[in-house]
Length: 79
Image 1 (tube, rainbow, N blue to C red):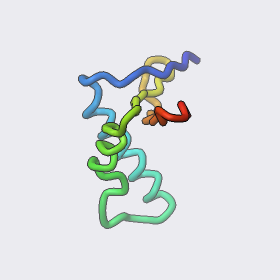
Image 2: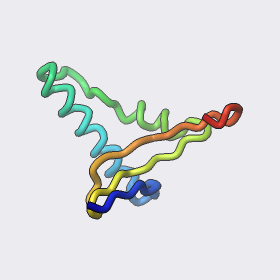
Image 3: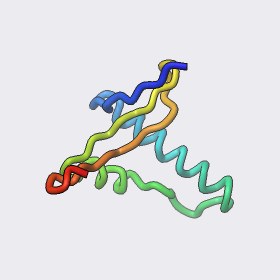
């Protein structure tokens, strides 16, 4: 198994958002049933992406996207 964390490029951003929304929606609905609204609205993703110090990564397993993360580093504490 080959695992990589790769920064999200502009060309991947819309697909990244869509994939994350679908994953969150599916996870919620498997536990709680049909949702009346989007569990992870795009505005929430954009807010995280636009935060100071944020970097988005996609997780690749054998070259295929298996997940993602948005990391926000606090400039004062570096955490």
